[in-house]
Image (cartoon, rainbow, N blue to C red; front, side, top):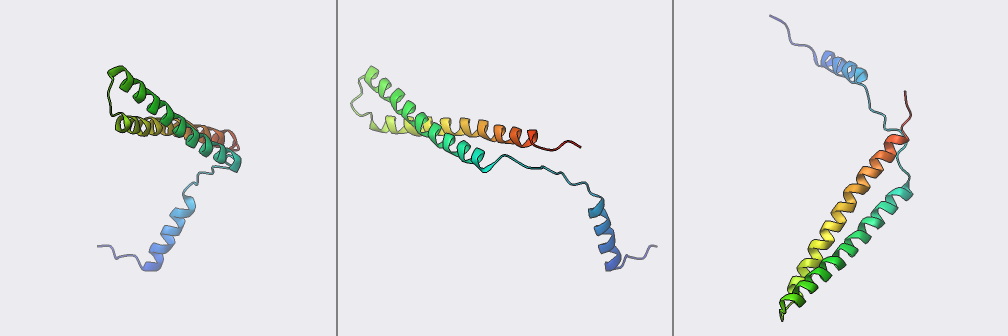
Length: 107
């Protein structure tokens, strides 16, 4: 039957395991300007997507000759804005990750 390790032995083995664990060095990432540009373009694409969604809903109301179009245009604007912002946001994250990988030093 084995005796349980003392707390100091457990701490020492944990420190040894932590010292042997390789760390992932991301290196220098993209600059602050890249993040600001990505954020601004994501907001801009959300606004433009909302305008497009509002316009598409407005055209549909004109074609159907509906009298109350404000709710459908608001829904179209919300959906268009969400799709625009999410789509550009995904591309921005992938671009920033690629920029960080390009600047990572090789070993």
